[in-house]
Length: 115
Length: 110
Image 1 (cartoon, rainbow over the protein chains, first blue to last red):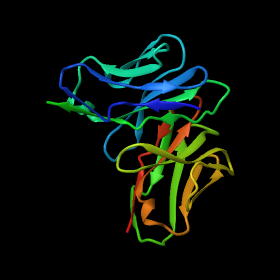
Image 2 (image 1 turned 180 degrees about the horizontal axis):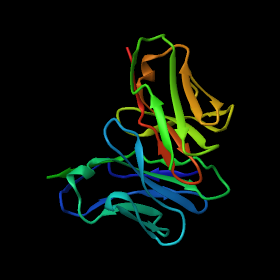
Image 3 (image 1 turned 180 degrees about the vertical axis):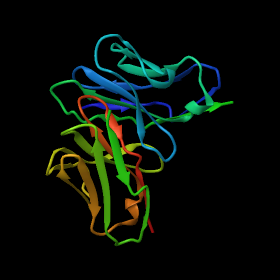
């Protein structure tokens, strides 16, 4: 079985400050990890993924995420938040081999960046 | 990269009426296709997925059904809508790794 936890329903940050959106996962085997962003009344957009290799992954719009195997975490980060980053963020996981190719999504974290 | 088309963008239907939502995919061949429902702008509920033409797997028993008549076409249907079918419906396509999502259909059942 695989699961994802996004422990914060909402994250508030001031514009210009660093932001972190947390994600922890559980999977039997090596994980593929993903972050997506959703703006109101839109579909999800892919931000970044961890497949293998370097634990620090860089993605779209200045976002990055660090894969931490010992803590089973994949937190999303950005050094300086913009008001336009305000959106709903989803973490997803699936096992890399020997299991379902269907990803499991977290419940989502609403990021609000204040001017 | 892939492009996912969904229509209509919004739909208001009375209880008991039929439903047909269509999704088409560009930029790939033989993708895995998915239908999700999102209630209240939050978590995604996987409804159906397909690994090929005519191959449909259902994740949640309900009055909805799905079909894949062509490689890059995925249709969500219902014979009689319920109030509880209201929500935001998303189609997604997947190759090796990440998923690509369509713009969604906002369905309101009245």
